[in-house]
Length: 282
Image 1 (cartoon, rainbow, N blue to C red):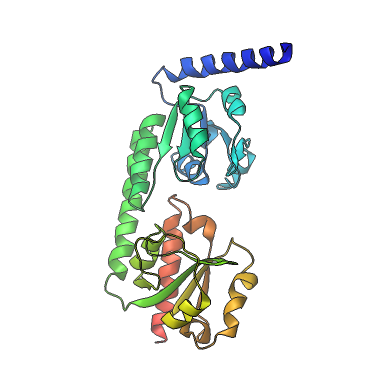
Image 2: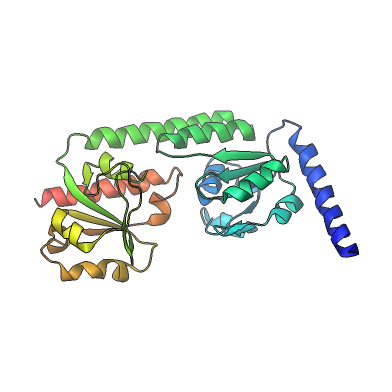
């Protein structure tokens, strides 16, 4: 019983310290970033050294690998959050457990919710974080740079010949990134047409038969989900698919194109270049 009381007391002291700090309305100096993309954006703004805690898979830039881990997709260690005394917690609405977010909010912790759903949300997120970090000027610069590059890529590919694309997420079970997924923005911006074009679907499980029926010109696979050989070899049995026949199975770095960070434009440009390779041979 005594041990429980001491533990509760320590948590209370940590909470009061965090709560008091959070009321100062000063630029955040002790940040907990609960998603890899949040870590990348904070570093982009030049404040990576303020991050005191993060989650698994936050590995960019390389310095981020040294940040203490306080959880991952399975959940966040709330006690550890309190011990770190953050004055800003960047939580990801789509990636962190709802119960963890609600728990931190109920404790009065300074939680900022990252609710990114499209590419156009990234510069908005940069400006919001810039305000919280007292870095509005650099945030505006980075946001403007992102918008300019995004506009340039969209414009450069807007009139190109459409290609039928199968955007594969997993191989076992076979799962697609359909038209309802935000990642589909990259495909359409590069002049691709998703063969799973139902905007009501995000990441449906699909059949090889359906892919065969739709005859995609291109198959795109994220390289961080299993080995390239393992993910792509399933298609060698189906040479009647144009993408397979012409060896137009492309692997994109999933750590780039699946994160709402500024690096996604690198993956987008790479995807557009790959599509151009296909067009040149048609």
